[in-house]
Image (cartoon, rainbow, N blue to C red; front, top):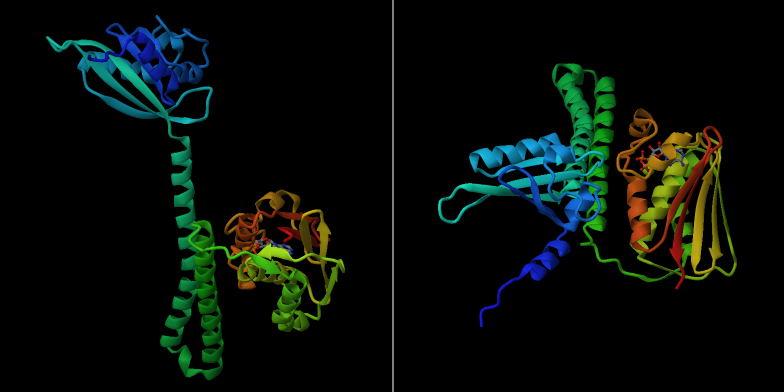
Length: 346
Ligand SMILES: Nc1ncnc2c1ncn2[C@@H]1O[C@H](COP(=O)(O)OP(=O)(O)O)[C@@H](O)[C@H]1O
Ligand SMILES: [Mg+2]
């Protein structure tokens, strides 16, 4: 027995498609539209049938249908269908008579490609940012090397000064590349997260030791306050250290000499919340939602001057969220900032 698809089957298939589909007769009137197409043009069931694209109110698609009905070729376009903001890829094909090949109508398929286009745009913005960040230290290195070669190297004081600038810029380049690699390995999930019970108190003490020289150099007062009964947390120790180092490093960098930094760890139900509060310059209200974005800095020149890459907080956010935790920030300009992270207890 040969199975034949009847109208019921075709209706079921059309209704289940995510793409909008509309078929037109030879004069450009809608014969049939599926649910996705009705939703797309914001009409009730059957609301498109018998209408032309002119009546439906989209001149771009009207032009596409007219062209296909007249010339019999396929056309593609990407368009925004008002009042929506999504981007649709529209593909219109002719329907031809089997025998004499005359054009009898057309079928239009609408696919939402918004996510793909946004992704493309994000990717190209990212590549643009990375290139810019790499070029800045390179330009400066090249400038100093050329000046040295042009004769400045004969003067040993100048030579030494330029070489130390070149050294710092090279340092920054390699930090930038390290940060980019660590961000991409966490993001691509290729880095296996090795969750183990970790003593947060010990990790924080060790990070305070690592950054000890920077703390003393600025005569900062750093205090660590924690609940006595703090549970162990579930974390990948290396990644946890990256989080703590980045947050303490920022608190140190963005707090003037003799300022104060308080680290607090307390338990709330199944989470341990750790905050880093400083008495530094703070962050303007409008920048708060953006500080965890890659390359976002409140003051680009200052961050660069301090050797920052603008990636630290993006790395922090990624690591903490991949552990099932959360990040937050509170701040007022001139009154310091508080950055917080939470981790799950064992
Ligand atoms: N504790 C803080 N106080 C004030 N501003 C901060 C603090 N931490 C971060 N910021 C702001 O957030 C930006 C992004 O931080 P981050 O991603 O660590 O990049 P970087 O430190 O390399 O500039 C910083 O450039 C700075 O403007
Ligand atoms: Mg930083």
